[in-house]
Image (cartoon, rainbow, N blue to C red; front, side, top):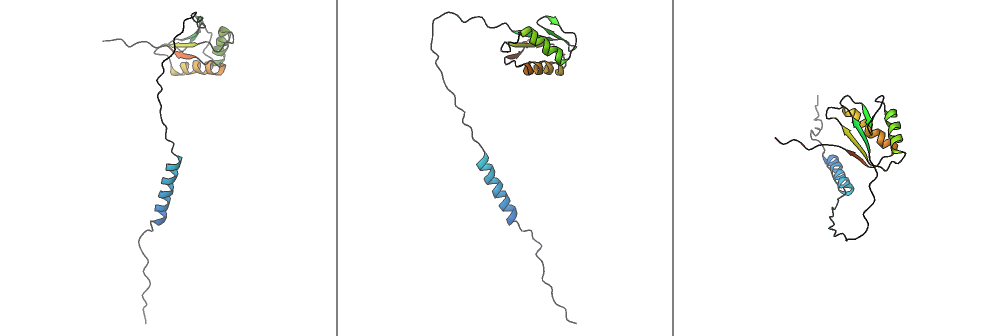
Amino acid sequence: MQFRRQAKEQDGVNLTPLIDVVFLLLIFFMVSTTFTKESHLELNLPEAAGPEAREAPRSVEVLINADGSYSVDGRALINKKLTTLKSALSEVSADEYNRPLVITADATAEHQAVVRAMDAAGQLGFVNLSITTRQPEEN
């Protein structure tokens, strides 16, 4: 009997394809990365003498109680539904959606109630939205 030696397979892992993929990813990220330059302009505004600007338009105020009920410009709404809030905002603003809208919510009011008010304002097209806060008390 003659025994022949069989060729021994290499037990190593070929890393060449892995290195190729890593380099391709590196090149991709280098090319696709955007670098932003922040520039700061220093402006010296001109002075002008003239009549004062007319009064700012009267704002629409939405009050949100601790239980999540709404009041629009001092009038309480009958329920907490989005459609009721939207119709009240539309009626009070007289379809002038460029008027400022101020949301004043109780600190313990549900977050959903505030989001619902913001959603109603956004769906109607209000662009000037602000939320009322207060200064923390000093101890």
